[in-house]
Image 1 (spheres, rainbow, N blue to C red):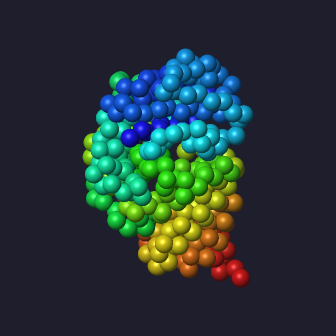
Image 2: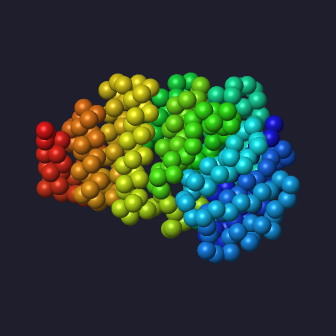
Image 3: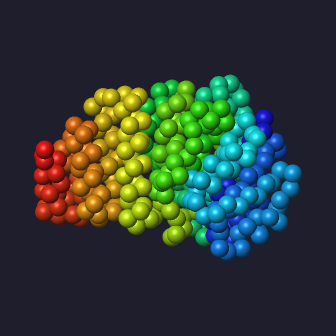
Length: 313
């Protein structure tokens, strides 16, 4: 069963050689590597081209963003199973093999296999990896339960943990190329929602590099707008599966996470409007730990302003 490893790349000359070599050391032999350079201005493309072979394919596009690069990589891929990987991250050498074997036992094209994830800084061999909050070791036969748990901050997921059949991804559709922040969260919410269930593989893991320039650390206006759009779609996905108070409350919690992160009046005002649509009031969360953090950082004046937005007709 062939696995396609899809790698979007932009100005990754410091990491791409090590990432490619890591993939080529996977214990699962039947794989191909598809790399799409997203208009890099450094030496990334030339470095990647050195590894080109019958199983490693390198493509180049003008700068359109990681989502566009992933869409092109998927279009060029031929594997039955798909593994996404960022250009600066690693997989444990047994990660793909362990997930393929579990997938084969389940024998369901709509099932998703997830792995653990570890955070590291600098050189992987010289650093202590810190486990992320990650997927439960329990199976999720109801995809909505996992999505709600993610919104409640019970688990953290990332695009490289998944192994998914291409038929499921084809049915879900393309990555949203308008998004720059949380594009992976929005995409895999859609994937999980259309799956038959998510299964955790206890063997193998992703090594996620903690870099200052990571897209996940963006706080620009473009990134804020991307997060809002992504959260709106993710909310629609959840409530489309289950329009209950617990589901809507989980979506509200997801909006609230970024109030303390962005410190943006624009985001706060828009989030308050979306929270109102879900049937909640900012003040609902006064007694929660998250609200107390927001209150301490933002102050009484801004919290009152958000509450007024909620009540505005």
